[in-house]
Amino acid sequence: MDDKGKRYNDFGNFLKKVFPFKVQKISVNAGFTCPNRDGTKGWGGCTYCNNQTFSPEYCHTQKTVGEQLEEGIRFFSYKYPEMKYLAYFQAYTNTYDELGSLLQKYEEALSFPEIAGLIIGTRPDCMPDELLDYFADLAKKKFVLIEYGLESTLDKTLAHINRGHTYAESVDTIRRTAQKGIYTGAHLILGLPGESRNEIIQHANALSALPLTTVKLHQLQLIKQTRMAKEFADHPERFHLYTVDEYLDLVIDFIERLNPSIVVERFVSQSPKELLIAPDWGLKNYVFTVKAEKRFIERNTWQGRLFID
Image (cartoon, rainbow, N blue to C red):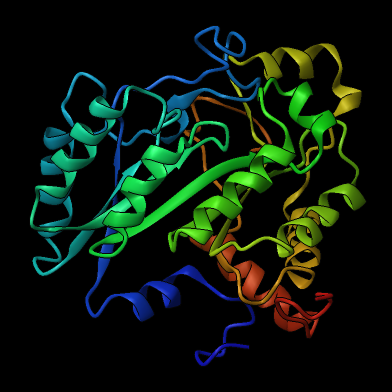
């Protein structure tokens, strides 16, 4: 357990250790695409993806990075005038462009005095050395967290969902990033089609061997207007859609095996109800987190209890 009595290494405490003030993420949609979407490595993107699922009202591509940040800061500063912010480049692959264009967008965000750093969501096959050097220099002055979408550690799954990269590429890029002194995160979807419960839990063992700062988990959600939604309609036998109780125990089993030094950024994601096909739990993220914390206590367990170094 940590010094706050938490049974897992949570993101809020991590930020409190890094910053002497409160910080809040502001999502930015900078108009990027993905190499498995534009034909470079495939078409149509990941089979589960509909990016409307994580774009708040202020976050639209017709607005500049600066306009989105201004609106986000205005929204939050009304209640918390002393708050600082992390510009979260979230939608699609936020390192997939010409270097000059990328740097212009990042620097536009950093030009705001309220912005304390960047969080960059991207793919492990879209991090050239030149860009990594930029982030390494920036990390000496500002907070920088690079979140890599791994989604799975199994190549069979990565091929099935049209990711366009291998797990070996994920491992290599995570190691390169961490070696540069940059906070390094991994994103994983639990419950992808074809993965058994045991295979999902084994992801924790694989990630525990990597120099990760953070892990972000979420349950598989079937979203309207995606290829995975059609796959589910045609082949429901390939899927196991977890109930809340099933997923709670799956998450706890996962976290028990996770290296206790890795920060758990979140357990679940919440897609807009109008886009969600299933599973519809009707729970806010914070409600699930409360349930998870209670389940840790009920099972008298904690992060890393079954971790093998």
